[in-house]
Structures are given as structure tokens and as C-alpha cells.
Image (cartoon, rainbow, N blue to C red):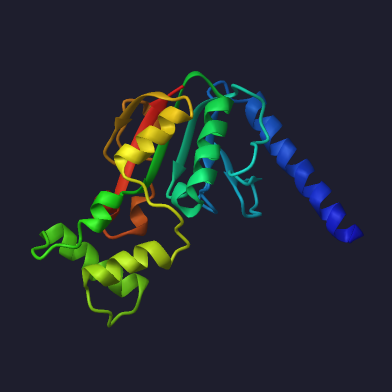
Length: 218
């Protein structure tokens, strides 16, 4: 018990040092939420896991930052892993810690793309996604059917709530955001928000097929 308490105190001290040093030396402050071991250079990286050089943070709880300290926030394929109410709470915290006119960029699976697989005449992009996804996510000999791909998306990776554009935009507005816009992966009007998505984790074009990226302003 004592050893565990000492470890938690040591972790908090390390997190506070990472946070304070980053904010003290970053005139343009950028928060990356839920990237796991994938750290973005020039960003303060935060994740629920205990990782070197990463602030340990449960994004469903109050963030360990004062109001209005970040210019940009980016989170990729994370919000779908928490229940809807927790995701809404996370977006309210993002709004709180952004500076006035700060921008958030959220990339997440697109429900429209996923349920659209259930068609009698899949497009080449849909068929390619099912072929790869079923074999990679379920088993090499898995039949590439819409049912298998959709079940894998919803159940295998701990997904809790899959958004479409309308629902995610409405949730952002309720959190206080405005000027909500959709963008292709890796593209943005803001230099700081370009080329952030981890497109290498899927074969070429498949993450773009699966994903939805929205930006919004505080």
C-alpha cells in the first residue's frame, strides 16, 4: 500500500513536470489526447496508459490543466472507445482548456462508412476494406462479409460509441464549439493540424475510407 502511494506520487510529480515544462516553453501549445505510445513532436502527449514522456490522463475525467492554455487539441481514434456521456464530458473539457479561437481536430470511425458496407453491390473501396479488415481483425480465413466487418468494428477493439458526422458535430456544439467543418485525413487549413493521422497503420486508403475528421473552434 505504501509502495503504491509512493509510485502514484512519483507519477504525479513526473506528469506535472512534463506539463509545466511544455507549457512554459511552448508559445503555441498543442495537446494530443489518447495517442498511446505514438507521440507527436511539438505536442504535449497525454494518454490513460503509463508511458515514458506522456502525461498520464484519463480523458473522461477533469483534465489536469487550467482554463484556456492550449491553442490546438488533436485526438485520433480515441473518443469511440468511451461511452457517449464520457465522450461528451471529454469534449467539454477540451473546450475549457482551449484558448479563445483555439481549434480541436477529432478523427474517429465514421458510422456511415461502416454500416454502408451492408449493401448487395459493394464498391471496390468497400470490398477492399472488408477483405483486409476481416482477415486482419478476425482471422486470415474469415469470409469478407459485411456482417463480419461490422461486428469486428463494433466489438473487437473495445469500441463503445461510433459517431456519424451529424452526431459528432452536434456533440461538439453542445460542448460549446462553433465553426465545425469536415476535412480529409491529414489535411487542414491550419498548418499545425496537417499530417497528424497515423495513416500507416492501415493499408493505403483504408483509414481514409473508415474515418471521419472534424475541426471546430472555441
